[in-house]
Image (tube, rainbow, N blue to C red; front, side, top):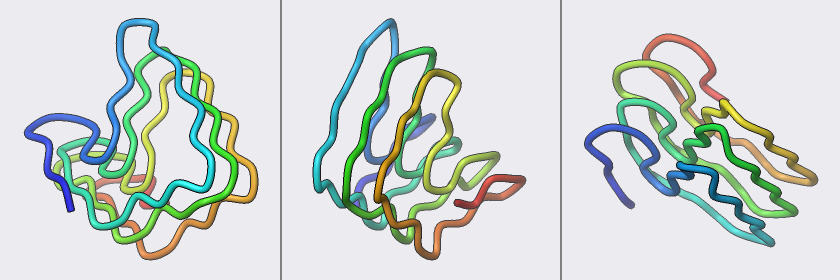
Length: 88
């Protein structure tokens, strides 16, 4: 249950950052873009876990908005929504 004024309600990756998430659940997060995760030209790996009920209120990427490398394995997307596109 996090809210970001701009991007990445749950997690925001910027400026060459990298992250590896294992069995992580991001539930009910809100941002203008990338409600659950926002990845701006970074590396993200995620194994297991859930992106659920996240919302991009103004634009894209309810569950995740990625402009970098995102490798997801065995991740569940459920009931994410976006104002314009990419609800998953």
